[in-house]
Length: 235
Ligand code: IPE
Ligand code: IPE
Ligand code: MG
Image 1 (spheres, rainbow, N blue to C red):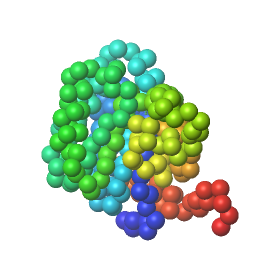
Image 2: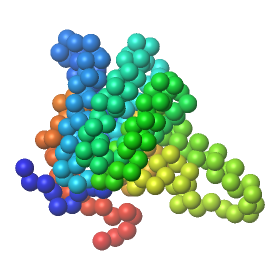
Image 3: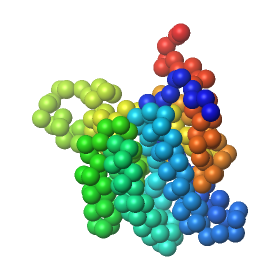
Image 4: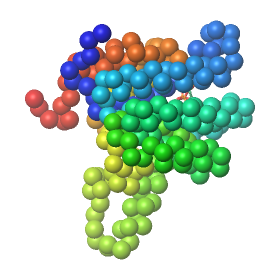
């Protein structure tokens, strides 16, 4: 396998199609989520190997709370378990692990696991893995606007610039994604990173998330390498 020369610094994934993957096999939807964890592992392993410094995953949206209670519970349990099971790997591969989202909605037990995983990996530097949990783009922009408005009260007459927003978003300090990959054939953003994807390249693939492994990842990276990014300018 030939790795493209021009690699993104930050690849983000909307991991979609777990339910359909399971249904197509006559299994329960949650089986698709279990198999999806293996895809996260495969993507992480390849990212470490290929030297991609930021990799992020949309794991659970604010809207996903509206799913049946049983599925939500299983997903939350799975998340906590998978996270702790990866701690050894994070250590071995020098991976910093971060969870971003509306953590007030998560259970105390899950928040404790998240705190532990984040504290344990805080000094790691080779790759930053971000899990977006109970996240939505509009929620992020709103909480940022609220904080910014609060700061501006003390500075009347000061007008915020777009670049001032960055440090209020929950993604402060993390570069915007260069590449966003959505699996399962859906071609929408589903309230994911809205502010941060202003100049992101999008790749949509029909592959369902549990089938998205190294080969599919490499194909998306090749597609990215062939794109001409102009950022509004003329080349
Ligand atoms: C993505 O798979 C996982 C989450 C959104 C939590 P889905 O569960 O959305 O799978 P489909 O889209 O129903 O197939
Ligand atoms: C997007 O998938 C959210 C995550 C992958 C976590 P959904 O399956 O929730 O999105 P819609 O409902 O098809 O837009
Ligand atoms: Mg879906």
